[in-house]
Length: 178
Image (cartoon, rainbow, N blue to C red; front, side):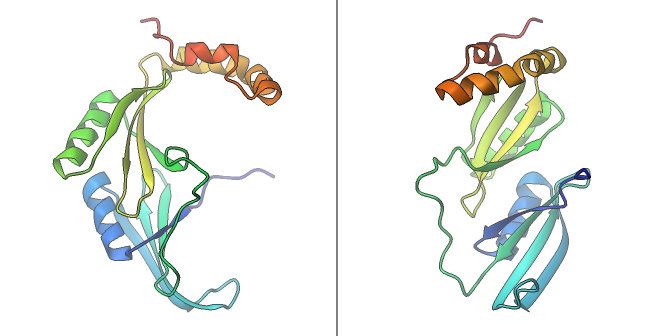
């Protein structure tokens, strides 16, 4: 058995319509499906909800639930805001910079461009407080991925023993050879 692909990723939202419009305007995602129920199909619990689905490209679907009868959304206070996020790949650095300019022109505060070595990213929050990342491959992506692949198990084992960045992590942020 093997998973074919992610069917969809679901998050909670404050307002389904606002969320659909924001992702359409800011990230050019098409609104593809809405499901509204007054009862949870799996548990039969009475709990009205709106479930909206957005096209994130290449068969990837981002979904949201609006839950009007539940207490306001919160987040895990023990997890830093930079940890939990969803990342979308864009074609290249030029497109990443276009998105950055587009978002900033519409009042969205954007962090980055951040150089992760193998890829470059910008970060921002959607209207629900979810952190979103847009990432593009580095020009030297293939070489860097091969280097990372060669040491991944060693890095994981060292991390498991020490809970510190393994010595091989240094080249993750090293200047790629061009």
